[in-house]
Image 1 (cartoon, rainbow, N blue to C red):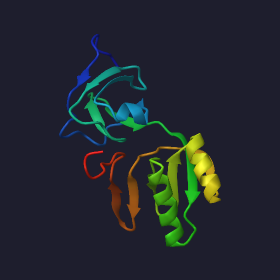
Image 2: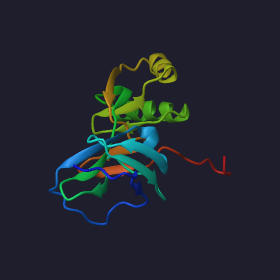
Image 3: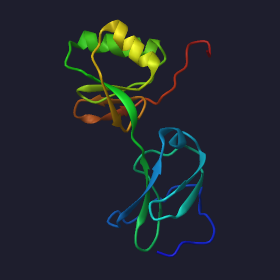
Length: 163
């Protein structure tokens, strides 16, 4: 594939594209995806610069060529995985404790994730909650809702009174 001499600047994602085109991934960290301005290289070496109004999400097609489409893929990171094979009240308590400590979380139907760190390890240790350290794509504020699409609550929140 021929690469343009200039780095393409992505200011908006395509409205439509041929989804049958092969995917060329653009690896990005969760921190990069949370920003509106950043740079990355696609797997084929094509450089990209992003100057967007809103952050991107994992799996977003950001450009196409006649032969392929360029798709942003979030890199896995170290997380602590907590199996939710406990009573609903215990799962709620674990989630509350993580949130009260201002730790980010996400959950599938049977697993709660939080980024690996000393504070998270110490909290789960105090609560005597077993966990497994592993690599996973972590999307803060994403929570399973049974057979419905996961809810995307985001990573931030506001307290009453603006604090």
